[in-house]
Length: 316
Image 1 (cartoon, rainbow, N blue to C red):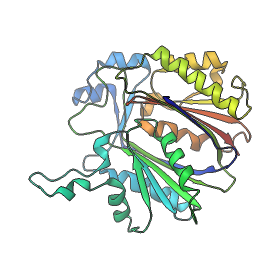
Image 2: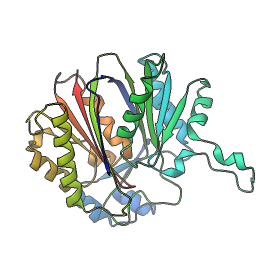
Image 3: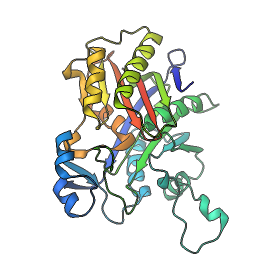
């Protein structure tokens, strides 16, 4: 079985806060090309809908950008009882080992420990993931749900953070995909506000490539199955679909089969900030929270690995 479905309606929990940080430098496609940071032609990326991306200033570390998100979330709630962290790039999971250092344990300098040490919070339990690509929100929600069941745990913070690996472009040589440097996070608890996490569906494959037509078919099937689990019609006109800033035509086909009108299809600031990896699924939640209580949000992600994931949330 390559699909997993989680129904959280019997044991409800909520995304009570979210926050994000983007690389402070905004550069156009032409500027990226001039700086040697593109593998694709400018016009190829422009046809998809990209215009700019966001990149971190030279010298910015992953701890820097993740700490900014942590502090934003901490301002609005008590400190978390546990921390779960996700990275879309495996290279970001640990601090690089200095050249010439042959110490075995120096190769286990994991990012969560570095972040908590920097924040002077050395007594918060933490765990992390990186093998689910850009579907990090869904992986973190599944982890957080389990941790919320632990004794004396009231709040779990999820963070996802990635900076472009050095000596690589911001785009893919195979797909027309432009990325940005970004970090984002959320807090989950039993407090009834924000978004109720209703269900999560995850599909995984070890294949190197999945045809987009299959992505469309599976996304539709997974949405219908999740909606069936919670007795909610998958073709309701007011369901808001949050799509990642990538493969626009494929997601538009998903909307077509689910009968989702264009006004309910969200591609958030694709031209201005490009694809922000797992943060694509988190950033728009801040903008729509509290706008229409009771509305169902379907959040989609597709990531290298390969992975496809859908989360259903209900606005409180």
